[in-house]
Image 1 (cartoon, rainbow, N blue to C red):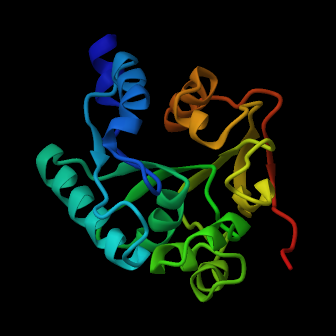
Image 2 (cartoon, one colour; image 1 turned 90 degrees about the horizontal axis):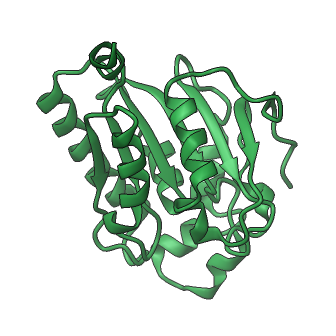
Amino acid sequence: AAERDAASKRPVVLIHGIHDSPRNLKPMSDFLMARGWREVERVELAPNDGSVGLEALAEQVDRSARALVERTQSREIDVVSFSMGALIARYWMAPTVTVRTYVSISGPHHGTWMAHLLSNEGARQMRVGSPFVQDLARNEGEWGTITVYSFWTPLDLIIVPATSSRLKGTREKTFRVLMHPLMLFDEEVHTAIANALDHAPLPATWTLRDAPSWP
């Protein structure tokens, strides 16, 4: 039974955020592998400081995802992304690789005012109202066959406003996590990710809702 359960789990790509590395994703990766996932790829974005545009980082994700598909011979993969990585994932998802489930964790989907603290290209793209954010907004909610989850904390001080992490047409859950980076290490978040990737029944506190209109 355990073998059948493991075989049903698709390979997973994990994408970190700005100033992070695959090391920050290890607790999440370890959690998933302990629960039966055999293939969990932690993408390394380089450089990780926003000094290049998110388009270039999306090319790195594409190479990693295509290599994972080739290695595992899987027809579908799942994607879990954090913060800046959530924007990169949305920009990247394309017909070259079939994504079944996409989990966004504290992504600045509608921009964050904190991005004004940096002046490099990647940070400018993450600002509220940036052309990059506006371009992604054009097809927000048009997910096709992809099941999308949006996980975020109202207490986020990096994604400002915190509601910027919401996405239209997703299964959404908020967490009482005190700081943005702690979303990567919180066991409740990890459990929710595992449930999402398994398409398990959603707890009663989760709702399917559209995000409000954004100014």
